[in-house]
Length: 94
Image (tube, rainbow, N blue to C red; front, side, top):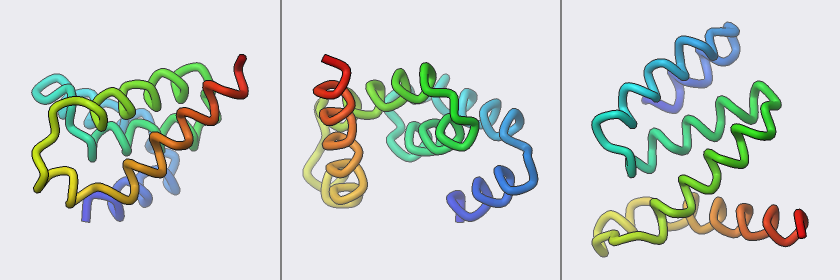
């Protein structure tokens, strides 16, 4: 549901409001993977490569650190793909 709302907000050019909501979520839970994925999506939408890279790195760190098996199982595919994308970006930047 949140993903659908975020897509609608981006389509209606409300990315600033979306980023404010995501920032509020991350203020209370900095490792919230779903919020970090929305942050990545919003920066990609804006083509803000500097903030996109920072958001991808935050997402990769959250994905790598201290997850329970249940939480990892819920988000395994998207996170693994994102972590692989971050690794690719890092290799390309070298």
